[in-house]
Every structure is written in structure tokens, then in C-alpha cells.
Length: 155
Image (cartoon, rainbow, N blue to C red; front, top):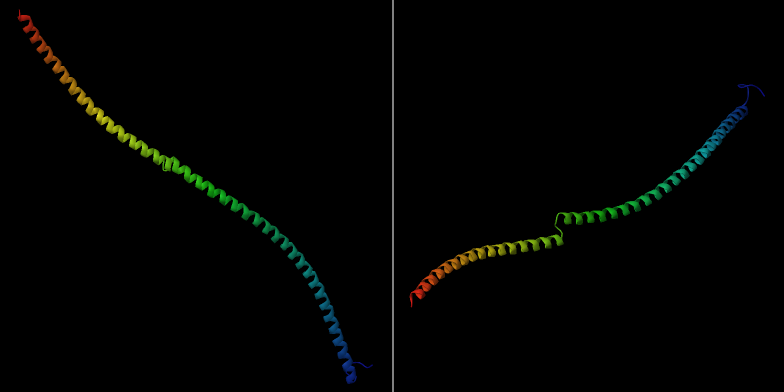
């Protein structure tokens, strides 16, 4: 076989064929290496997906537990808020029993004021009556003294 430039077209075709086969071999090797890398990357991706899926599952469980806990605590807060409102009303005297008691006390105080006024008027009347009785007693003493003098003068 002669060197390049001295051969026939078949030689050129053979050379071109060898170059094409070489290029195809290189492409095949590159493709095979790329597929190996892709498999490694795919395996790593699969492991990462499994790891992340496990993390997501764990976090979902924690979120569910925390959601339940928040619901329980919200119920307790609501109950405590209601109890606090009730106790605040009681301490401020705004509950029904305190209002009823306050009305009763106000009624009793009004009656006590009326009774006091009546007693005050009665004591004034009693004082007047006592003065009148004392005056009557003095008048009766004078009258009796006059009667006694008259009886003493009669023989």
C-alpha cells in the first residue's frame, strides 16, 4: 500500500472509513462514560430523593403532631379565657349574683334610710309628747294643789 497522495480513491475511502470508525469509537467511549456518569448521578439522585422523602415523611408526622397539640392548646386557651372572663366579672362585681346582691343591699339601705327618717320623726314626736306630758303633769300638780287647798278650807 502506498503512502498518502499516491493511492487511489479506494485508499482514500479506506482512510476515511478508518477515521470514521475511530471517531465512532471515541464517541462510543465518551457515550459509555457519559452513561456511567449518568448512572452514578441517577443513583445519587435516587438516594437523595429517598433521603428527602424520609425527611418529608418525618416532618409531616411532626407537623401532624404539632397541629394536634396546637388544637389542644387552643382549646385550653379558650377555656382559660372563658374562666378568666367569668372570674373578672365576679371580681368586678358584674356577675348576676353580685348584681342581685347589690340590688338587695340598695333596697335594704333605702328601707333603712326610710326607717331612720321614721324613727327620727318618731323621736321628735315622742319628745313633743314627753314635753306635753310634763306640762300636763305640772298643770295637774297645780290643779291638785288648788283642789287640796279647797278641800282643806272646807270645814
